[in-house]
Image (cartoon, rainbow, N blue to C red; front, side, top):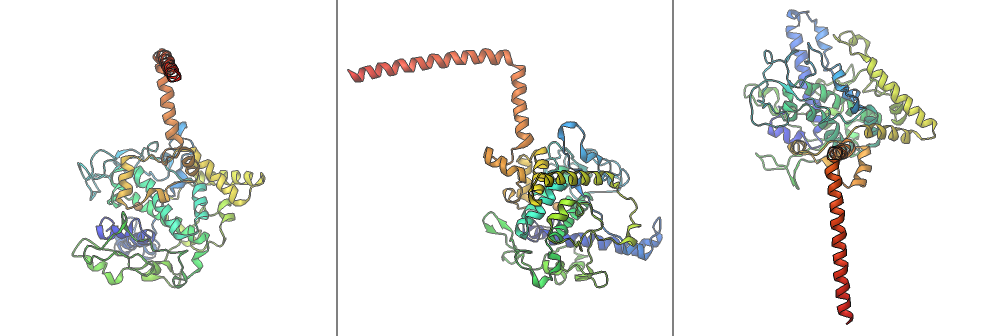
Length: 468
Ligand SMILES: [Cu+2]
């Protein structure tokens, strides 16, 4: 469904991005609930119908795996709870060979090559693979940078461009292989990642108190139609030749490739962004049975978030429903997350004590985290990815510390470590070849002096001739 060209044209690089993926996640969650209800009694351990109803998709809060120090040789991402060797598979680049998604149990739709950065060609097999080189594609957003962007982008158009180009792109690029194509759904990490993107959207809505508005009350601030484009031209539906429309009341397409099952997603049932805005309550669900809440959340309870968000009643996130919690089979180790949040709270408090106001303190916090690691280098691989999803990287990608770097160097995409790497490379070269460089420099200086003397002499003669 995700790779269907008609869906994809609407789902990526447009204002449908967030709502389209939300419903897509909900389709998977509903399918899991349905299977658990049907086959629950014969599962090991057996699931009761009540357990089945409590199934919820988990999210990967990758911001907690941000690497604040790339020089210490500890890859923070490798310490993540994500890599359970019995579930998602160990942290290892290449073919996934443990967990539930090895070649024995899991056949990917997309055939990949053995080159992590070659999108689509030349294919070798249908085995799930991951790249995971955090030095080549670093995770670029830590909690403080996320909070800073969420707080400073109250306009939907601004927020959606940023979240799709920045926080959404980086994990896709980092995993390479399947995750870097429209067949990213081949890797279950897709859902963990997109659930986090959906969570960040909820946090944004909750932070600015937009959750209190009904779909009829929404303005351009909460939802703006950003139509899909091909360069300067609007993308058109190949059947009707009409431009795709992605307004608040336009239907998001969910074409399903299989002829036999297309009845599951008939076009009359496709939702609009307005339909998906109402998330329902415990007692009365929203559109088509939708009911969305995000549970206890360390990020929203951090000091900079609490103090910089307009409303402090978190109704769509940080939602505690104790009954459901017992169902999580593996509780994440929250110690590491709590430690991050604690250090962010401490650094933030120091800045307030120094006399900064809450926004200044938050921006400074984000600035420091941003400076800790490089931005993304605009390689062919990165460029190809942005073109594939119809995104303009310059519109949403630049981070808080890149703005300064851009004005200094006049070049986007090459700041922080990249320029430091170049400098290091030059220093290294100088170190190795200093005898050649010194003798070369001496010869060059002598040559320059000779040339200058020659020119001066010539000019003098010329000057003399003119005078005569
Ligand atoms: Cu994605």
